[in-house]
Image (tube, rainbow, N blue to C red; front, side):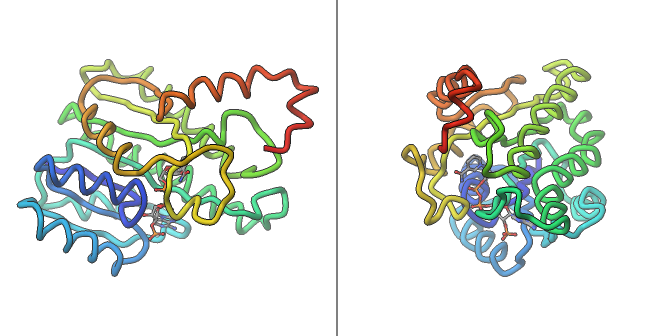
Length: 243
Ligand SMILES: NC(=O)c1ccc[n+]([C@@H]2O[C@H](COP(=O)([O-])OP(=O)(O)OC[C@H]3O[C@@H](n4cnc5c(N)ncnc54)[C@H](OP(=O)(O)O)[C@@H]3O)[C@@H](O)[C@H]2O)c1
């Protein structure tokens, strides 16, 4: 069976690819830069006896990423898992983005997950496979930073609910992780209010739960409490918070 990892060239996606290869799954790895993907695939190929394919797609500009992935899957074993640790955030996402930049952020963080899930759903239903979405603590409550990124991440909650509402847990495993801070490119050089988790630790937990039902979790779990506290703050206090 094949696992598809979208956003596999760095951070959590790269760690997931490593963990999936270690568990013996064949892989289709996707990101924008073919050289990065080849480096990840070559490294995994040396250490694990699995088939690894790669596909370079610029998800900021690709109108039909699902169709491109379906083509790349021809000839590979059936797909059993689709993991979407793809994401892009920007430090100037504070109401100063142009329409073109807003479109790019939405394309990567929302259009790509939606379009890819739509395109691969028939095959995933056939294999009773898993769809794994990655949200963010940044979308717990709207604020003046990560305006577009958080909007897109919040929309993934709706996609998760739509998938769950239409599929029994034994027909399709739908899993949403609302992640806290990770030590990856996305947060490199950013002053964080809390310590960042290692992608490898998160990847181990995600891969261990593949095919084990449908759920939405905060990861690490303590972020569930943090999200609840942030959402519970009275508006008058929250307005003044600059976190
Ligand atoms: N880091 C955090 O603190 C944090 C917190 C909460 C949630 N998350 C979420 O967790 C997931 C993993 O994040 P991460 O920190 O591991 O991010 P990362 O290290 O920046 O990796 C993001 C991945 O997305 C790919 N990607 C970005 N733009 C792309 C494009 N235009 N076309 C194709 N691929 C593209 C990147 O590949 P290329 O750039 O090489 O194409 C890379 O493989 C994301 O969904 C992120 O939103 C992260």
